[in-house]
Length: 284
Image (cartoon, rainbow, N blue to C red; front, side, top):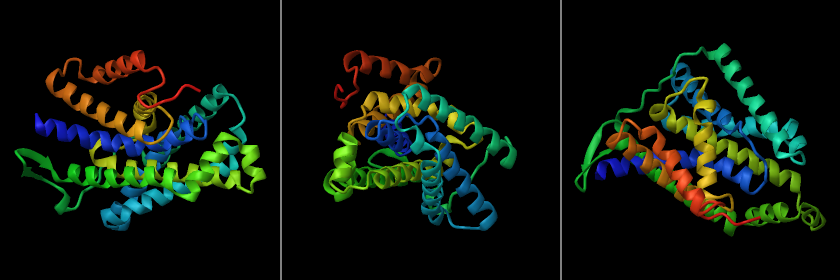
């Protein structure tokens, strides 16, 4: 039981890193970006290429995956996304889902349709006994790294000048501009960081989740569930929701494999019936 709980926490942490960028763009920037998984896929494929063809160590690939996805997000935000901020949510959904299919087709053409794998370094493989649990070393690495990222994100949004500027730009962009806040730059940096976190999640999740051109479509619903269950008012809600969903998914597939894949949806329905705006969401 303890081992299953730990694996669920690790899976939840990974979901958080993958989905927190969407929580920021949807909750703070009010933009529905269904193409968020494409940035995660970009980070995953960057890791595969760097390791397999460049011989780059795995740990060095993680910041590289973040940078690749962040730069891609920044370029797309400056050229495409910023023109959609004032459009309706339906327009944003149609625009971003179109980008998803373009990313899937382009990746299939460039990299093939087969699933990609990475070879972890020897010190990250295997399991160890810890407090009566058989703990996977790589999953423990994910828990520690993602936990630090969650703390850093929360502190960054609540205790930094940039976080204050972002909240001001979201609350009233016109007044923020009048106060000298470069709203466009703040949104661009926020979007780039969210995309970079997705790329980092894609790099970390390649070994656990698998990586193929359909990655953005396979996990799109999981990203949306995390945001819906956790709410869009900050980072804490999606973090708690990711842990809850990760544990529910792993435990469900282990104890009741016949319906294990549906446990996540049952949890989502139960939470939204009791809390329509999510665990930590506030009515607009």
